[in-house]
Amino acid sequence: MHDSRNPELLSAFAVEMKARRNALGISQEELAHRASVDRTFVARMETARNQPTLSVLFRLCDGLGVAPEEFVAQTRLRMQK
Image (cartoon, rainbow, N blue to C red; front, side, top):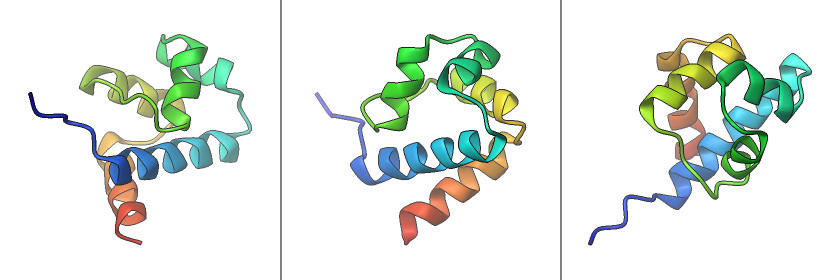
């Protein structure tokens, strides 16, 4: 079975998510509430241990006030650095 995890991508995603959350001045708990996910899931995503489904990605972006395409583009830029 193929492992679909890409450590560089997960790390870039984690950094982007945490940076945006911190820029908003909200806690993991607040982001979790806004995205209707558990706070521990937010923590695991911010440490690159978990990855969201597409529907959760869209809810996270709503909670962060960013369009999904912008979030993905910025994550890609972080990954390329």
